[in-house]
Amino acid sequence: MALLTTSNALLDLDCYPKVSAKFQQPWDAGDLYLIESANVGSHPAVINDQWGALTCFLLQQGHSVYSWTDSFCGQTGIRNNSEKFDYSPALLTLDQGTPCFPKATNSLWIQCPKSFDQLHWWLTLALKQLGPGIEISLVGMAKHVPVKWLKWLEQYNTDYQQHPIKKKSRLMTFKLGDKLPALTVLKSYLGPDNKDVSALPGVFSRDHMDIGSRFFIQQISQLNTLSGKVIDLGCGNGLLSLACLHYFSASALELILCDDSSLALNSARENLLARDYSDAEFHHTDALLNVHVRADTILCNPPFHSGNRISTAAAERMFKQASKLLSKDGQLLVIANRHLPYAPLLKKGFKSIKQLNSDAKFVIYQCTDALPSNR
Image (tube, rainbow, N blue to C red):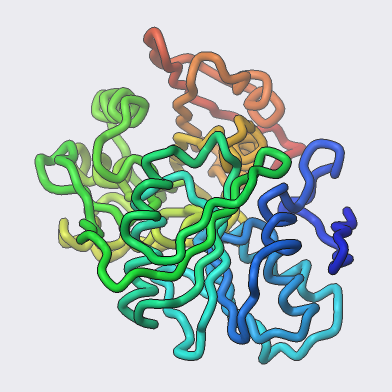
């Protein structure tokens, strides 16, 4: 538990998954800046609230709130934190996938994403659904908001204002312009089968095949066989699943795709359907939470960032849960950046850890024989 205290708020908040407050607070300086300085409007919407500080503040003030986040962990954090105080459930609308703003929305509070395409997409949807003139309050850590973003926002919107940087956080307010540049919503590249692999804004590496996945796919193509229940853990746009379908018999595979991002899962679903594969399972979840199968193979290219911070916490949860779900003779295949301390984490869950391949940047591990204490 951590208490967020400002001149106009007192909130009891937790991260999800829970971590000690000395390592991670369930809010940041941007949340504080918005809470203390931004105009709310009578019908606010919140975009990209990490654990619910903004949403809970607005609920506590008696507002009806639309809150969108792509993240399963983010949604769970918002839900858990909002349940700590009394409010009418009808006041909160939690959404994922493509944002769909209530018609009465007259202000948006936005935490900056890592991708400008995603911010562009949100504003484009707001303009299409709500019309111009909506008041926008946008906040982010100053070092993560490039000058070209600021220039774009000023050029295409009205009443644009940059507020003084506070605690390394930058606040921009403006009214949504009446015409924004066109956005390519789906971007793509050629997959291992020479067909397009597409993804929505905000999905990891949506317009190019990242080098780690390329190296991993080379290794997958060299496996003697692959069949049975295969989990694509942290699937993104489904690239590794597409590689499995390309190099092995689709009829012998039962694909299960899991990701924290609803947009990633939507992208992966469309990419599989484009290959006439409609038998996959999709789970919007934290690692493998609430997935109940015995997997023959789990493929994992884990994220190592939480927001803009390097973190192995998500990978550790993935490894721990994978060790519980593997069949007796199952395998976990993991690609890791060489500088990340994954080997000690993997040893907590598996007796056998074999290095299948490596290059200057990456290592691929094959983990088998899960420890009994984890099963």
